[in-house]
Length: 129
Image 1 (tube, helix red, strand yellow):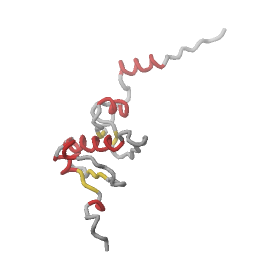
Image 2: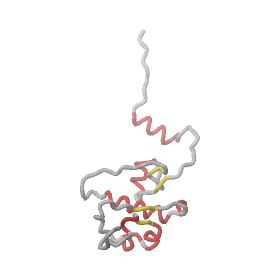
Image 3: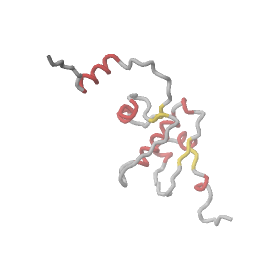
Image 4: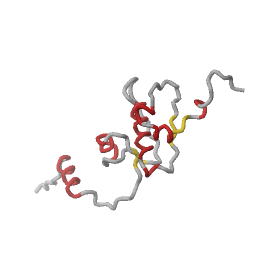
């Protein structure tokens, strides 16, 4: 006699996980918000944070696909989140191609919290020694 093994479909597994939750105890971890609840949910299964702190994130995409704006939005969300008040926020515009007015888009608190890269602080017209 052949034994039949029942395997739950993927949909049944997802529904079961949603109804029963995660059986393992949850460790408190800090997540960086992206500015989009849907993107946060897709990245971390949490509405209030997408990227796990302490991890390197590579944002890859075509030209003009919104990578810089996503990064700036993430920095702005982080700047306004009191959980990150002790963190240093750095925006490194490696190509010096960003023409966003950060203060107009995200407010003066964001501008005060984000540290520019040191090479962008000097006057480009002044020759370096």
